[in-house]
Image 1 (spheres, rainbow, N blue to C red):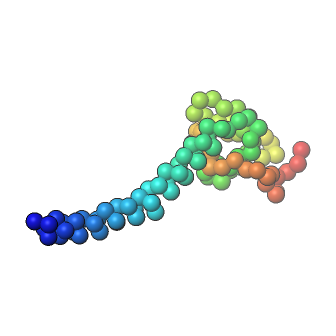
Image 2 (cartoon, rainbow, N blue to C red):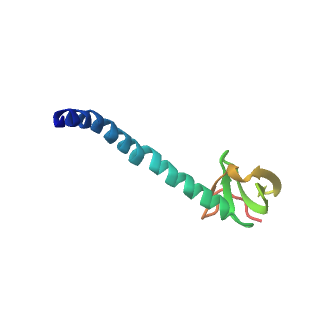
Image 3 (cartoon, one colour):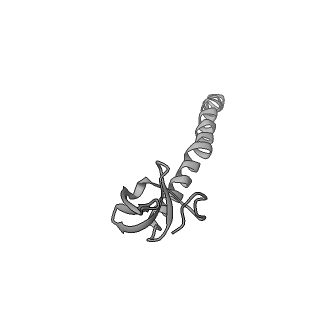
Length: 100
């Protein structure tokens, strides 16, 4: 009977190892990345310099629930985005930004 148990364990062990590898190499890093994105989106505030997921740079002028209003370009055109369309908060100004 113990030989049968050992045979079953030896057959199941590789499957458990594969699941563990997938978890630690694919699922867990993706969960960490999503948590960081959600944290960034939750901490947006008026005046932040941001980049949309489409590559548009601007400054946040208003935030309402799930929408963000950004002013863009030298004409200070206002664009409205969904909050989740913000890709990143920029720490430094864009090099080619025109000065007022």
